[in-house]
Length: 433
Ligand code: PMP
Image (cartoon, rainbow, N blue to C red; front, side, top):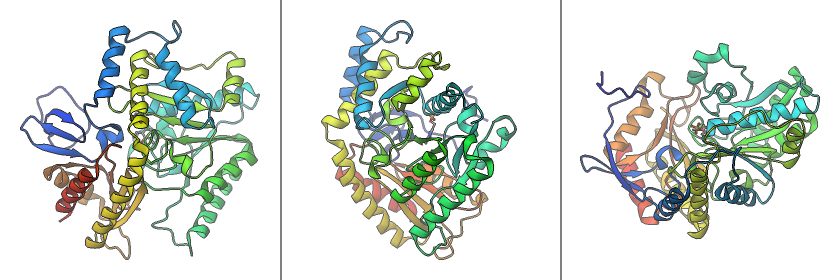
């Protein structure tokens, strides 16, 4: 047992961090690590970004915290406008929070309040995917589809209707189109069994995070889901806590397929690892309806404070000023090619999927049967430890309920260089060997 009073999750002893510069971190023994997963897919600009540091210091010199019911603040207004611009005005209202889970809670509560305000309070169910991850607070956990996290709390969360999402690696249909038709049909049937007029919203991650190892959707799927939501009059929520703010090469991942949601959550990369900042973005009509019914009955103390928003604004401006969306596209191709080359060398790599600087690698016992390693092999932990020994940080997840294989995310900062991607791939290759 460690003598430290700190506790998080069970896991191996960790080195103590000393400092970070760009995509690299050093521990107090002087060992160097390439941050191949941006901390928790959050450090979009790497470590010690001078523009963000300077913006934060300048804001600290003015004022760090004011409460949202007492003052408007310039950074919050500017960041809200920047976010709306980033959606090309698909979404026009912004509600700030301090984490991804808070953003998802806010989406759940705003969507529910919208229907209560419209006299449709019989709508009380959410539809979400299995597997998925939407956060650790009880509302967000209730719509999360990941057994080990759900199990202890299943009796005290409302839960959601869990439907399968697209799985382009393991499906057994004749082709991807047939697979999407089947997934959409199953979703429709599950919703009809409950009654479309009892659904508040469908919630999904356009590109999955750790829970799925970066599973992707496609245009036909999003169009089908959008159509289904419109038919039954429910809302569509995209959870882009992890995939948002440039990580996939567009500001938000959904823009790659051109199918807009009614609400969108984002966090992680918005604060770029410097300060917790998240946001719920929504269509104006939802907000107008809720505001006209007495206001949104929800809020968090630190939400939208000046320091948080100045940090978020500096992070967004850095991505814009340093042309990082272009860099993400180029580095994304390099990562895809490099990871595919590793897949060709190592039989245990079953699938490589993703986009931009968000890649999932799924590990299987046998590439033909795609059978996962036994859960107690703890392969995800072993690969992560070996990569760490080689000086590379990756983001792991255990096999999913014995259905999919162990996997890990490779998701470096958006400003990683060509040479640094080379180092990342070399270290990963050594760990795999
Ligand atoms: N939604 C998604 C898609 C996420 O990836 C995460 C975090 N991994 C969350 C919500 C929750 O965010 P947070 O940990 O900041 O509460």
